Amino acid sequence: MMARRVQFTTRIGVIATTVGSAVGLGNIWRFPYEAGAHGGGAFMLCYLFFIFIIGIPVISAEFVMGRAAHSGIMGAFRYHSGNHRWDWVSYASILAAILILSFYSVVAGWTMEYTFDSVTGHLGNVADSARHAEFDSFISGWRPVWWMIAFLAINAAVLLGGVQKGIERMSNILMPLLFVILLVFCVNSLLMPAAGEGLAFLFKPDFSAITPSVVLGAMGQAFFSLSIGLGCMMTYASYFSDSTPIVKTATTTALLDTLVAVLAGIIIFPAVFSFGMQSEAGPKLVFEVLPSIFYRLPGGSVWSAMFFFLLVLASLTSTISMSEIFIAFLCDEFKIARRKATVILTLLAMVLGSLCALSFGPISDITIFGKTIFNAFDYASSNIILPIGGMVISLFVGWRLDRHTLLSQLASNGRLPSWIAPCIIISLRYIAPICILAVFLAS
Ligand code: PHE
Image (spheres, rainbow, N blue to C red):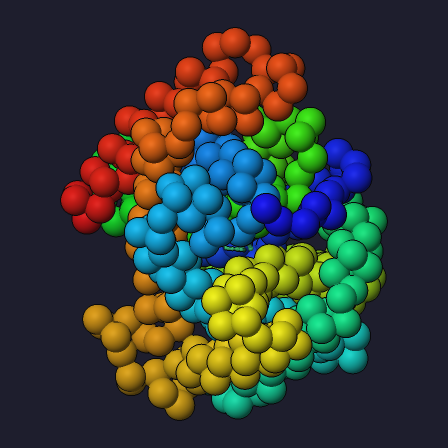
């Protein structure tokens, strides 16, 4: 047996950490652009379906596996199955973690550039009509590579310095602030001339627009945004105490994460329509729209600097959680020191991240299955590996896990209403795997 693991001491600590992993660029950058590219309301409807019908049961399943085994993904599969036959799931999740870390750091780097440009006043001097060209010229050059390297260096410094606790404590204070700022921007966006059009785009589903690619995109977004399917939540659950309520924590995490994404949508789309911009702009969307929103308000640079800085911080709590997957794997499997593992991960992510960063410019003609390197990394991890990971985890917990363990973990000292566990189990056994498989087959 393992030595006694340190545990989270408070309930707020538990929620803050799981939400810290979940809330990040996925909500504020990826959700609006995916929704914009996939027809708005149709995407939103599918996204909400996946969050609540599949997301919450799968987070619960990760929590159950992690807490019962007191270990991350590889150890948890071995502990519960008693053999090494499931190791491939962990290999896939490690691959996803490194792919995500690489492209995510590029976008976090863009966010750092925007924080910097807000502070120096440069961002405020760009005319709204020139934002598109300005951002294009920025991402097609080499500067994003340096910012990406800087971001990964900070990520490594946090991991090496063992100051995750410090970062988490800081983000516990600052994330509510991010939330308040989002609310202010929401009100501001709702007062824009085309607010109604923007809201209708986001909330009024056009059912004929629900195509297999929309459904697949929404499923990938749900998994990405909740950080599920690769064992992040499993790792965190290994630090839960026996009384941490699993289903409640899963539901709170999903609700807060979804709330942030929806707020981001409410901020972006009224502005997109009011400024006559393209909702299908892809990964660039948010970076072209947000500054125009901020600089419309009095004290624009302050809003802008604050917002982008908080976004960098939110990204950091997410990259720490994906880094842990890879570091834990190297340390456990190859018996190398944590320091060395962190350095290996960082260098690898810097190389892959450079390819992602440059795929908007110098190497944009290199494609993998018709996608640029950046898009291919994102697509392969979010739309393929995470859902497959989620499917295996739900089948494993639903069918293979010992019944008694599953029920007692879900009940977490008996405070769970009796109808909830059966619902979760039905979703894990049938609904989640069948839906995921169906989406794959259809697309
Ligand atoms: N959920 C994070 C976000 O929305 C991204 C993430 C994905 C983090 C997978 C960890 C694992 O930004």
